[in-house]
Picture (cartoon, rainbow, N blue to C red):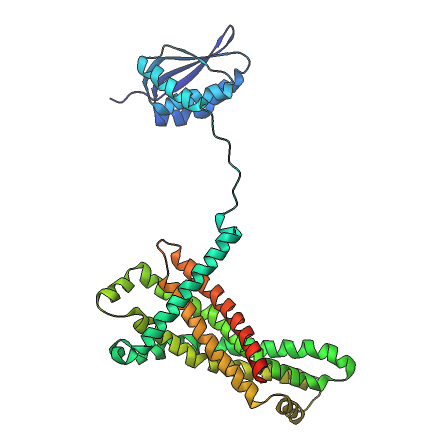
Length: 372
């Protein structure tokens, strides 16, 4: 037959309050009486508080913790009466733990990764890892004739479909909006000088030389680079990459090269699509200002050249390879844990955008030096 549950009864005394506890003061009994005991302890502030434990059939550490908490609520240790030796030992341990000094909260230190030396070291490590990956990719390309069985064209077609053709609606929408906004914002100041017609020159050159390949690469980094990192990162977490190595298959040839080739082929197509959509948006604005299609066409042909288009498409191909390489590198470098894949996808997007802008600056200097 189980012992009766714990009960509480308050008795007044000449100098304070007596809390009489009876029954089984275990976890369940402590939970039931916690608020009532603390309420009685607060009511006895400034007077004596006595716990009569003679009627307890059982007292565990939960009950001892309740009495220690009552000491804190009362502001002074309560007097214990009728307690067994076991109860006395438990109460001593609970009171010692409650009265132990707590360490002061330390001020939050500045993370070590934000110090200049740590930032420089992280940059050097990232650069070394990037060069290592570039070297592995180069070796994989050179050894591709001997590993033709590992390189499947259907993987290239699948990645080109995922990265390119399914992104065409997004590219068309963004390209049209960029051309529309750029033309409208340019026409406002140029209208003050009666040079509205030259908006077509400005937008066409901007799209073909800079904005087309740059925006296509940014879209590729956000949509495809993160997908590459997440896909390969999941394979890394599930140890599928290790399984490929055990079977004698090269992950660079099997996973990385098809993705790099697919983006090399598809990024110029995305850029050309974005250029055409941007031209359509610019034409919409110019038609709204009353200019005819032959006049707009004449201005575009006089400002933009085939060299501008070819240079933009060449830059787009390089941007695409860089974005794919960074995404695959982030996936292969995925760590362990549930958040590792998310970190890899984030690193792929950020790295792809930074690399695209850096390469665009390098191309700007190169084209200037070559007079293009």
